[in-house]
Length: 151
Image (cartoon, rainbow, N blue to C red; front, side):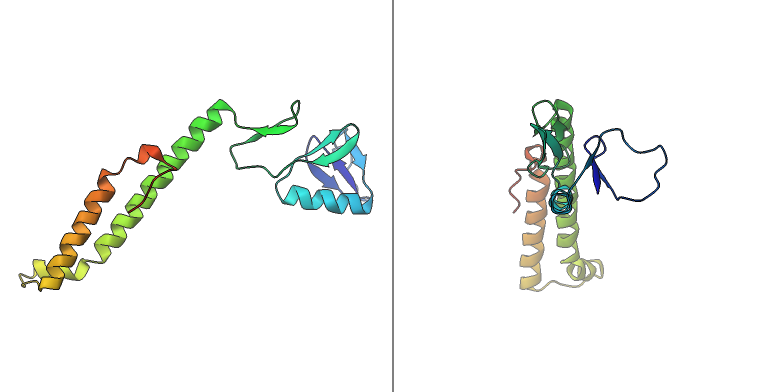
């Protein structure tokens, strides 16, 4: 088995790749190949340290990129902004989901009101609690995402 650091890919022996093979292929022993293959599948980056192929710690998240000079994962400034925006968007989706679930829980009560029926005391309490809950959800500052404390 061969490995390319540039492409972070493994190449089996005996396959005809024509001239599309990377120019940095390294021959691997079977046990070394297995270890590195497992590391890559766990999210590690394989790099050469003092001539020895080494697996990094797994990639912390999809926003980090590998710094080949410092031999570590880092978070570029644009990725910090993207990660924050994604967290805020995810929080908004969660708020919408919680609101929809709350509204579903009072569908029968709403139907009773639309039909002009009188609500029982327990229905009135539940309706009030759910509306208060939705008010709390709508008042939440989602710019704090991902550190949002959900009610």
